[in-house]
Length: 454
Image (cartoon, rainbow, N blue to C red; front, top):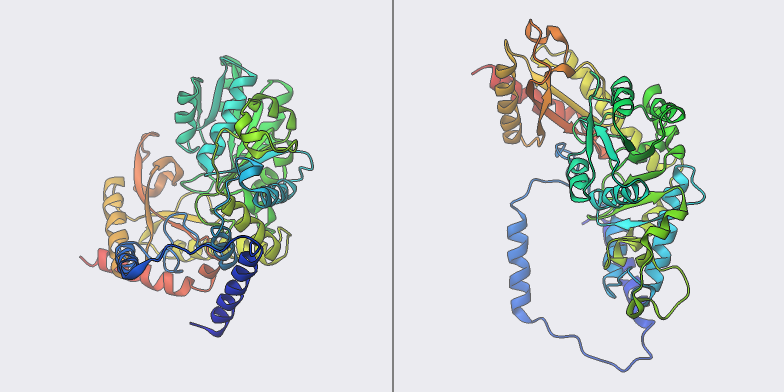
């Protein structure tokens, strides 16, 4: 353990004592003794947790897993001494205030001064609330999202009894604006879901262009920025991504996940509405929850009931330490991830054992497949490289993606548009990935050598 880590633990212990002292006026009560069995059980948990990939390490560059910041872990643990519930002020006055503060910081990041919002268990439930409001505002009308949008949008629409319309994407994985306009002309679409950072490849739908259609077709815009939203702070984006993120302030609702790029423990999502008036749809009576205060209860603007106040404390603490300011430490971490992605793509492009897609990374996700005479052969080799990389202590991911995202010359002939190829996928979302690119590349190259030498 480093000296800095030891000092941080000392500060945490002091903060814990300060919290406990605030209740010293109460009669003493003894904590239930844990006994020797507790230590044994804890060791069992540690042993079982070893059956995981090293998500916290820079050589883990597979799925969207980013370790929470130390301040978030400590603030969460501190709050868990009380285990506050942010459903009602009775259950978490301080943590409810922290939630309003944290959600306000997220709203201001996108230029919203007025808003209605709260934290959720994650992007799925946050998107559910957004589409629930959409359905209440326009009963019977459809929800539209791209064919690269998160699969839960179609599922949520079904749960809510709303029709769902899938919109084609272009060769960059972005929603095709012409296809959207054609759908708007033939369908009653009340809400268009615009994805800023698709789960598979990190593509950003052209929100700025989609908003231009509102003058001819009346629809709400819901932005699913669960993954890519924080990149609004980055200053090293290409023009299409920058234009899309700069247009978020004109959307009607927005989802962002602090437990992705926001350095928070799972689960911590956020739903934001630009018009606070939609709070009327949440109105309900629950006198056993709301009788002690006339102030706003977060439970009155949420479909979820019990929600961890510890999440709010962790997020608010992180924002205090790492403010959402362009050019500051937090923003530079996002930029480092994008630089790592561009670096990796450059190395891949110089190696004829790999086939790259048409589009360069818009955020920090890179994907590619293995060279082969057919898409099937490329898929087999991509899976083999993935497995061999694990043996080299490099942890990547696999994705099944449309061949239309790749050059038509990749396999010497045109492929059916609905055909898919297995790709290797890397999410370089840790700031450290930039410094670890040489080690990542050494292991990836060695894995490819092993596969192609068989």
